[in-house]
Length: 101
Image (cartoon, rainbow, N blue to C red; front, top):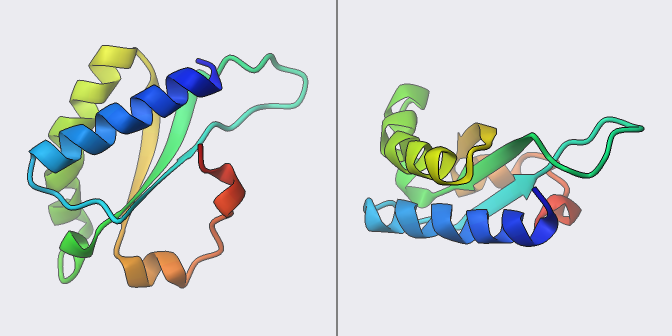
């Protein structure tokens, strides 16, 4: 999966989340690579930041995003790991903005 496909996947996921009623503040997509391997990404790391996650457990947050994640995985045939954060949790972390596509 190249960068243009990752951008397309990001837009699809963000739209699917929006359709499900979840307001996405920030979507971070990172494509980890192992030194020496080609640039075709086999897995993505996602951080979904939403005010809707406030006062919700990890399980409740996952319930809000699972259907959209599955739709995206089926459409693009790629696995990804997801971390669901509130804006405050996201601000308190050191996620690199350069990893965004």
